[in-house]
Length: 201
Image (cartoon, rainbow, N blue to C red):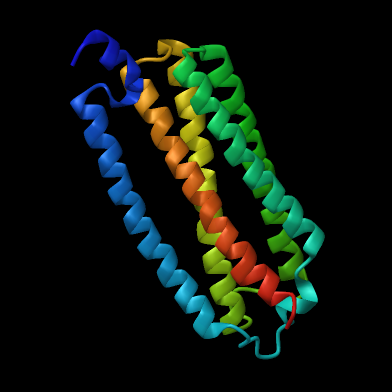
């Protein structure tokens, strides 16, 4: 491969190690899809089994859910800009947009914690019914993944500040981008399959 052809390849793909790690992460995401598919299937089976607890239609708040969705989808956009800045070789731009992405994700988590606390205060706790158990496990698992993603970004920000954009750091940034977009796709399914449907029962 000529030097011009090599320069046309994104930095994260220029080494065999980078290519293998990215392929390995796609395999990891396949396992994550299987995990969430199982949680969605469990939720579907237990849907509507609220026993004496409040129904989701009584507790789900459209405004909060829309704000959470806006925050997470916007963070996916800012994450994409971060990857673009990385490929331009702009460390400052990459750091800025990764920080914005992490802040949006953290704000999303804040709303989710508020939401859970509100539901619990209204009597919809984890052991109150099969439905609410399935809801908390599904939404909570996604929330934990978001929290892990934010922690991962913080560690990457430290590495980028110390080392700049290298074949190794660019690979890590690209992989966290894949992970973050994956979480946004999962949230779209939660938004439509859990919240929108739950609001009508």
